[in-house]
Image 1 (tube, one colour):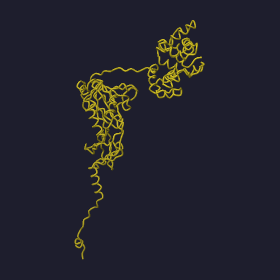
Image 2 (image 1 turned 60 degrees about the vertical axis):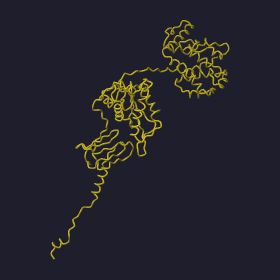
Image 3 (image 1 turned 120 degrees about the vertical axis):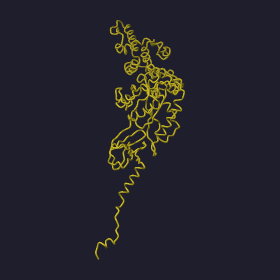
Image 4 (image 1 turned 135 degrees about the vertical axis):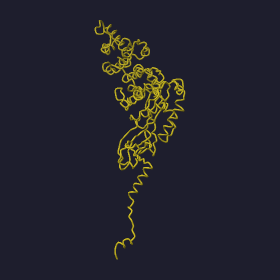
Amino acid sequence: MLTRFEVIAALLGQLDDRPIEQWITLEHWRGGLPPGVELEPLLPELLQRELIEHQRAYGCRRCASPETEHEEADHAFEAARASARIRPEGVIRAVITELAALEQDLSFSDPRPQLHTATWQATGLWSREKQFSVLFHFGRDARLPVVRMRELLQPLGYAGGESILKEHVREIRPLFLAPRTYQRTVYLPGEIAQCDLWEPGREIPVGFGQTRRGYVVTMTLGYSRLSAGTLIFSKEAPDILAGLLRCLVQLGGLPGTLVWDREGALHAGGGRPTEIFAGFCGQLTVGWHLCAPRDPEAKGIVERLHGFMESSFEPARLFAGPADFQRQLDGWFNERANVRFHRGIRARPIDRLAEEQLRAFAEPLPDFDRRLVLRVPPQPYARVDTNDYSLDPAFVGRRVELRVSQTEVCAIALDTGLIVASHERSFARYRTVTALEHARTLRDQREARQREPEVEHRPLSRYDRLIPA
């Protein structure tokens, strides 16, 4: 009669190049075995019944034609070790998930032995069954959270704390989930700049009692770790690239390559940039690199900057509006982020800026103002982002070009080049912005239309002279 923990121990023990005596301490399991039952003789039978067909696909050529039953078992061991070397995590997961089939084929004794149960419930120590239950759940999902695993183990009698479970899982998880390693990358001066979007935890006040979700285009130079940021209010390509250009101007030059993740406005699919992003890089003569999907570690420098902003810049700050947010952000970079001692480079970013080999900008710089040609309507207003901006009423019926930047909304007459309107851009919604001179012109025109026509008053003596008595 085989217990559940005997079957799992036998299956897992032979999936490693090490002998089972090293992988599992046999003395630890012998205490719960039935009298007269040895663990070692069970291994060939279990491998022969459950693993030999699976292992033939990987390895031992002699398994196809064994000469004796003893050689067949030896070949099964060899095939198990060969497949474990090829893909250990897949083999272990496959074996563990076959436990349900084993339960149907083998007769088990009491699946919940009482040995050590009282001690385990009282002190939180591990019994064999609970350890194998953890292994079984790991076989199904190597990333199973500890909180969920504790919920699954509590019906089996687990009364220990979460920290005890975490310590045990910390030892077991590497057997099922291959750990990821990271290299240390050293960048040359002026080589790259990592870029990303950071979203503040609170919405930005935009006036008139309104708030709006904002985004910060962040950039960090790979060599000096010098950083800059620009506030924008949309993820559209013109806004992102305008913020990116401002960051480059703040840093004082052009790096060799701009590193981005697969931002929707900049990534056209398949690792290719969008047309507007490619044009931006071409005009500035910089390279571009789009990281692989779901790989934020590829631009870990700027990601760590975001963590620093969340812990140093954002807490305990109040903002009067977008301009005040940008002013405080620039001050934080100049007075805190770029002058602190950076542990990664063991220097201050501002001190290493002189070693950065940034290239100068080529004139003219890219222009990302939105442009729209329209004819001034009888009601002289133009709508931008749910807001209406006034135009000069004297240009009603004439064509003008409307230009929208991050800070200004202006209109220029196409026939004469005269300025028709110039407003500070408002990021509040559903507002009407009217310039004072435009309001006065509209008032004068309205009063002129309402004024009565002047009629000449003649004296009656003139009519007496014309009419004879």
